[in-house]
Image (cartoon, rainbow, N blue to C red; front, side, top):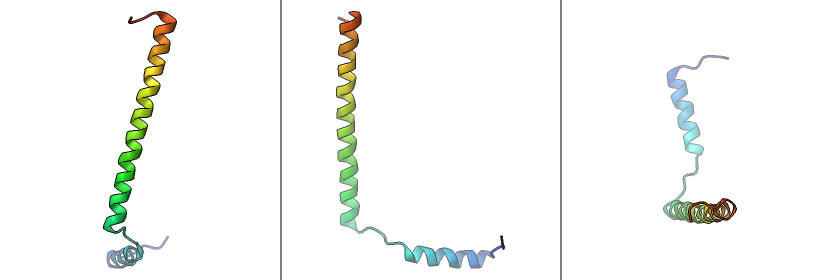
Amino acid sequence: MAKTSPSQFVKQVRQEISKVTWPDRRETGLSTAMVFLMVSVAAVFFLLIDQVFAWMIKLLFGLGG
């Protein structure tokens, strides 16, 4: 592999960065809201599953109640 000089490397990096399409403010806000929503849904789901498993273990072994 051929070595690249530091100045050539910086030039290539700038060229690649200019190709990136950055999200606008609305798209960033929407993505953030979706992440929070999905995290909340996952948290509630796992809470419910945990409660069901705890109930089943209590029923099977008669523990904690």
